[in-house]
Image (cartoon, rainbow, N blue to C red; front, side):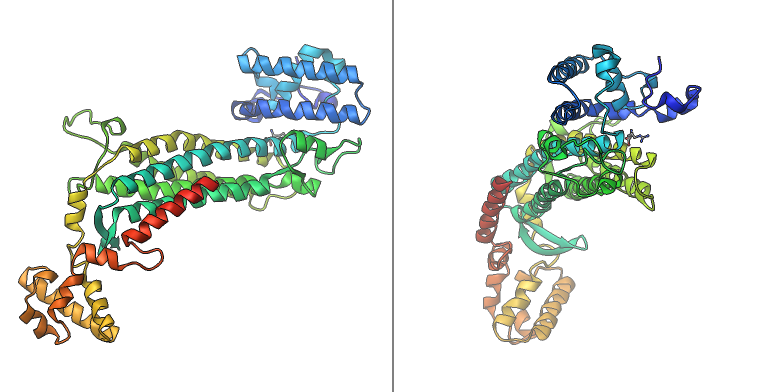
Length: 461
Ligand code: ARG
């Protein structure tokens, strides 16, 4: 049987190759629930506009309920000739209600305004799920920061030892971008919160249907301002995939560090057995596959974004079938993150931190040289000169194979008369970290406050 929604002006059926190319049900079937919700709302406005009697509306709603149950139970599924989720569900409705009543629902709407609306509904739901998963990851990072609050480590720039920091400070530096990703999803939702129902194919509807009523029923607070924009635009989908790509990139930076930290050479952390994998040949191996998959999937998430943007580039208004290509990247981004994030959160939450090892490495590589220079600045030495003096100390230590704190009073005095023995007060990791007490710094008191603010920010989400 011909289920096409557009058979009237055609004499023959579609070629098999076209039917196969055209069929989007393999990926858009996941919008069935949203499609049926849209149909319910549409049936109500058709009734309000006098185009369905109350009995017809009620029969239509009952048919949609039945169809929804059958879809949920797997008793109704698309077939090849269905072309897309919309066609399949219209076939399902007609099978249940007959062509006379079932054939009335399509009045005043197009698959173009439908799909633009349904994608927004779906992504808005998924954004909330992803946001909750991101907040779980933030909490896992905050929990490790709290548990290991006293642990110090070498902070790095250029991957070289730079200055000592609290591990907690570093972990929270991974948490804040993820909090911002959650905020990005909320901000995005503000723009996604407009229904395209009523835009029709592109020019709007002539049947006196109330689009704001449909919008409200579908959870939107407003209707698109322009029917062409409503059906042609996919910036909302692209922006969603930007945020998911950003999440991928942010998580990949955390993942990369955990991969490094779990190596023999670093020895900073041990992954829990439940979040590590073994080797099929090397019996001793314990591999950070979760972190590696996180790092790898960032590439895929960036690909979803760049693929979609490339599809949209230079696409003329209004609807073109190219726009169907928005769904697989966006759905892939959703699936990727909902699979990945719980594993990353589990890995972070179950990490064992080797605080002694981290703390022992914190002063190595002369990470206290800046503290020495800043001590001189507090004694009114110009920073340019202080930097030179501290550099000379490092050079002398390298020559002698000792640490800054091991320089004798005489050695210090020889480098500069400004270097009195009191300088040793700042040549400890604890002294260094505590002295960085400016806003946003790594001093324990500041980090405590930061942790509190992070949790307040999370609670507001
Ligand atoms: N399946 C299409 C999409 O996902 C919507 C249908 C519009 N098709 C059409 N021939 N106007 O974009």
